[in-house]
Figure 1 (cartoon, rainbow, N blue to C red):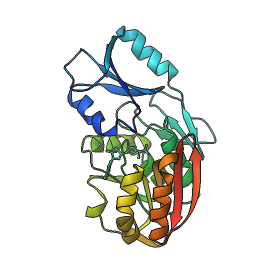
Figure 2: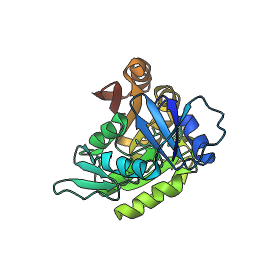
Figure 3: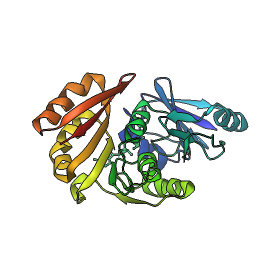
Length: 251
Ligand code: SAM
């Protein structure tokens, strides 16, 4: 197994990740300050990084062994080979295929924020759905959930994850501008500048009394998001984990 090591995180390298899959990557893993892309053989990549050779079996068994279930509020995010645990709502997500395995702070912030805010039958939009994890979590809480992503490659993965979890979720390729509201809740794990740009579209698509959950925001970028929330008349609360922030806002 060949590994291509890139400096950064899933968040900072997000626009480049589809390119890795286009060149034959079989899986991605986030390490301390790096993303590791696993390939069956070395390929020419138009990216800066370093190749490393790992013995196949060692890699696979070590990766599976090291990957632990992740707790976030009432949820436990599990790989398909993990055992469910009593007292948690299981979210079974195939790891390494798309962003959204529970191993990133922003996904955990969003999962915790969803718990207690999703009402039975509510119409919930997960914008930038990746693995589908947040839409699947909302569906498990009783919502009519929809997951949308501009990256078409994640849609079949998200659908497969919903099937694994036994929930109905509508997954579509696209972005917010093409969607019709109103939504009772919109959750979006994107990035600060995009949230600022989307603020009018969020406001237009939220039902009266609806909830907007925004994450993917670095602490250093939070001021701009707060300014935009205020400018569009939202009241908000802020939650944080590590360097990352989530806003729970209401119109
Ligand atoms: N929702 C998952 C989670 O919380 O772990 C994945 C979030 S991942 C950080 C961001 C996702 O947003 C990526 O899958 C990316 O393709 C998608 N994305 C980026 N810009 C977008 C846009 N303008 N509209 C819809 N999706 C977008």
